[in-house]
Length: 371
Image (tube, rainbow, N blue to C red; front, side, top):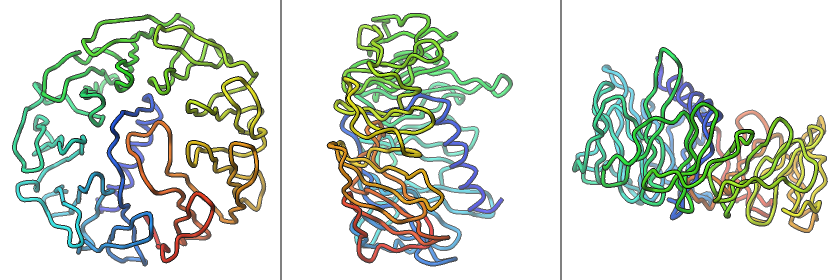
């Protein structure tokens, strides 16, 4: 299997996994500082920041790297014996960290800690930036699939026969707080996590104790952000649950709540998307193909037309800019695990990418071929 095929399969599996799991977030978020890009076809992977500045880590064509987060990035190299991963430190001349190479798999957890497997069948070790093992997960079936959130890590096991994952929690010192037993689980946020088993959902604290149970007809879709969690009651009633597990129906009639922060709610109605306040006041009418937060108070809105294009709208419902590109993606999300200064990656043709700022202005010198 080629390196590019492997990466695409891994990305595909992560996207599928994310669609099944709750979205997750955590306080004290790490920052995405650079993204990996190719400046030209068949060129090496280099790193670009939100200003369009490029740093070349000197990777070969058999090497690919991930985003730079908190000054670290992971490099995956194709070898005769399979793929190997290593951790590099970002600088004007990036270098591989001593003792942080030759791993089967690496995940950055935040706070200068990494989850690593030496081999596919190995147990997961949690190590510091010097490669020192701080603790090892007790079973080789255990994996970590979250960054550190409020001092906690979400762990899971996967049953290949039944295609089922079970989730639990451990603290960042390696103590198992909740054994993997839930079929759904969010990260801890605001001191609480939402867990599910047999289509019944509860709210737990950091000791694993149940502090509230959700009504049987309520299905949560996220963890807690801004004092609430997005949820659906029955088939068509959308709203939020509070820390006590009480469901409040959204005051306006909508087909779906897509996203939200403490001021605004992205909603869907009749297969079109728009923005409302939590009181149900219309900010942006539901007429766009999709709407994404661009900042906490601006939105990237995909036009519903054959020509494509995007409007950048503010919280008064006024257009800031008309972005005439084929495709655009906002890199901001109020729920994501990381913060970032990147705003928009736009594609104006096949392999014609460029960065844009929140005002819809192109970032000078930020053209690239792929990412």
